[in-house]
Image (cartoon, rainbow, N blue to C red; front, side, top):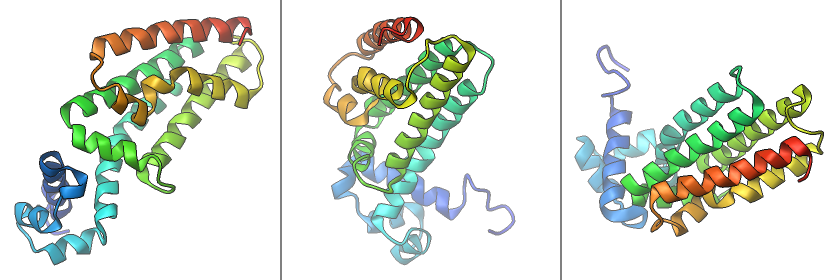
Length: 203
């Protein structure tokens, strides 16, 4: 990278911005590398120098979008708040971020929802890391006495099952006609019941 070629304005960033715009316009299936290259001001061969395949390019778009969600989740999980608050905030903030992307850039979100099913994809790895954050919060809650003792894997599965509609991209895509405030309200009610069960050991 040459002097003055900052990450925000360098060729990689231009390619990603052009690809995001192309996907928003044509969808993932219709996005063309030649159009992306033209919008980025380079040859399509140069695009392939940075991203050897279309899949790698789309994967990088997902990684760039998902990384801040994971960072926010880690900050919550590592904070001093009670475990119940951490659990609620982690899931609510992830839900809000997913819904915002779904509503603002539906074609990009649809790629995310489809990529979750692909082993090794950035979307699939993101789901795994978010699940690990939830597991950490649950373990901390049990260790501190905030939650009743439980079998770790079973508790994590229960959280995933209870919140699937609000945090799994495929479910959120199917629910895209539901108003965001209604979806968030339903998630809050679900989490309230879930936390009560974790505290009492009644799950």
